[in-house]
Length: 404
Image (cartoon, rainbow, N blue to C red; front, side):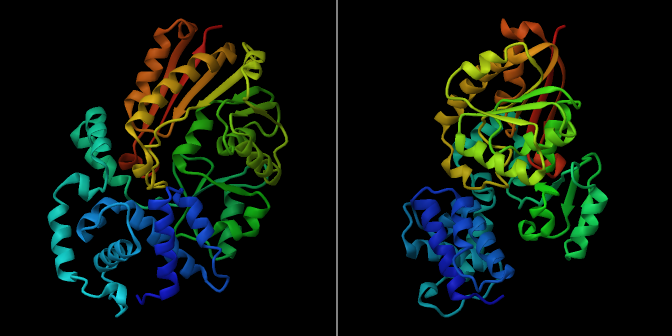
């Protein structure tokens, strides 16, 4: 592989924003990819994947490169040289790479790889937390799986097409997909491609949604005509899935504290041909109280540490703080208490997170069931999804039923 100066500069600029200005990697990369109209898909792929790679392995690469934060541009070029050397890419004779000790890099990599915090490139506190909650053996496998690049999974919008039809349509555009056993609405891309430029996407035939995330709406067990509340809807990936499972019949109340996210959901719903969603911004407790005892189904896709989706958001490792994880556990406890009151007698509730930590998952459910509000509910089942076992994102979901 030959390195091109303008692409490498884009990577260095992106890393500066992510590491030094604390901007989110996905937003920075989106902006970078619009930088040069002449770039083809391979160029854009190089910029995105290289940037994500260096973000993912920040601790390991900076240790090998002997640089410390805040990184200046020379530091970032040294980290880039480490990345290229470990990938077997020949360094061009640019001034940034003068005196790069390539042989030493490989030796240091082998040495540091014996230690999990360097090998998996994670902060000590996250490593300690993982061991404490999952145990040494399980955590070692899980954090290794969380460092693999995530596959692209589509969720077929059954309001507009079928899995077979979508597969054929994408195949005509040289995008190959395969079915996934146990995931009724999923198609997996056999190799990465920009699916957002396809006619099928513009027509609302699919959304990009990880296979684990698709299990959440399935667990809610919705039927056409029901009244369903999605309490932390965000931009609405699961809301839209619920709408297709309800065949657009009935009512979905999509709530979120961020109006900007609900605006995105509105646009996506239009593209998906979904018209049974009411959007509610949670700027007071009123919308929640109005729905007490009224919903057939309630989904609490709770805010969480995101430790199940590090494959997708590698910069979260560096932005997360122990205080945040402590605080978010309090939020989870609170939303379970408040939002569960919307479930009517005989109705069902799903509590879900994209975390792998028991303290955010089954422990929260157990605490809730022992509380006064939880006394009305019975535990039906739960599902703990770990990336190293499933090959997809780490997730948790529990189904509770309110006594009739």
